[in-house]
Image 1 (tube, rainbow, N blue to C red):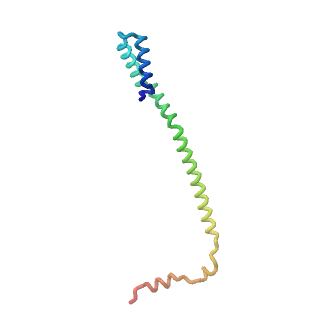
Image 2 (cartoon, rainbow, N blue to C red):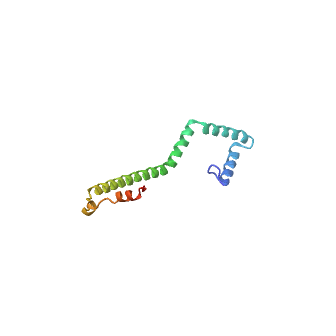
Image 3 (cartoon, rainbow, N blue to C red):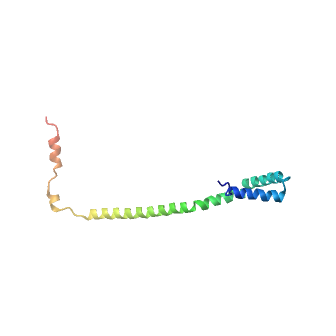
Length: 118
């Protein structure tokens, strides 16, 4: 279990060093001073800027991958649009077979036969 990246043995070592350096009498006063200092640090604008920059740096690979995927999708879309427009151009150029033009339209016969008889 780690708190702020410090394991239990490391925390015990820090407390032991603080106890030796400050002494048992003044350890409470030193801890309060350290707590106030950290509180001011965390509330400062510089710390907030640093935290925001850190978040941006951690999110950078994901953002770059997303942008690269978007660029790739845009390229695929352009290729698809070019392919579709080329296909439509080819369809426009196709000449219907002569026998398809010479046959009468059977839809008029169907329309006449389906009309109600009087």
